[in-house]
Length: 394
Image 1: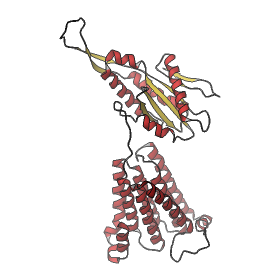
Image 2: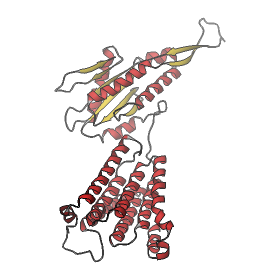
Image 3: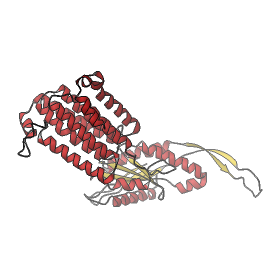
Image 4: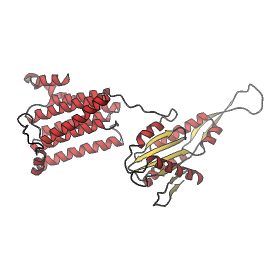
């Protein structure tokens, strides 16, 4: 419905040239980005950023080479952003996406400044012996990129019947119309605004992924670890973390104090550096930290900082103690205590390319057992087959 309205408005000069129409993209981009940040929909933020940067390039840069470059980059970026998993804009992964987008913007600015003739000729080179320029102002390479991304998202939409792939399809169509109109010298504001609204609609209607969390710590549980562990990059490190003598601690101070201690350790681990993602395995009573693109030495340093923080922390708790003797009816005595605890961790990395990540996790568990046998309150790195043991003690 939005696309026909945009087409009708674009053909009506009085409405098309109004201030409201010219302001529509700014309102859509700003409002949609704010919505994406508040709701944790990073894909919406980055998709709208790509649309805004494309529109800014068309307004401020006038060369044909720049037009061809953004006509190629826009469908590729929108297609990829709509395909990847959801992420928060204000996160490490979000910062990586932001860097990629800004790098592309810098390259487009450099292209406008240098005007490389060879690049312009390459972007305008026909893929087929068909001259479509009388009908479409976009170069064939950009048309092919739009067709590829449209085909991929149409297939995803038909297969999964989800709102986001459908929204991405129509956002790509609106973006194609916007670029074609701009290439013909016409106003593309409303088509860009329509693309932003369609992308926002698809993203907002997409059901957020269900995250299974541990009730005590609030951390993602083992099911979430199983999802992420199969999508790890080639270079990563896994760590298993446990509270030292937790069973004895809980039996002495009570289950509620044990839960408070688990929350304290969970809170400390969620602040870990290196982009570590923390999970809790209830059956093993262990925390697992996943470090992407991080060496075991770097991961061990970040874990040791958490170990020191937990060692220095204390908990003021009230423990209910049953009075001695066999006199019935006596009320429990409340004892105020200040308690503390320590943690140990084992870290491992894949020994070779293609190693099973679950074997790496088992190696981290072996390193954790070594840390416990060595006196606890320490970080132990599981040695690779070609390396020596590397341990950090507390």
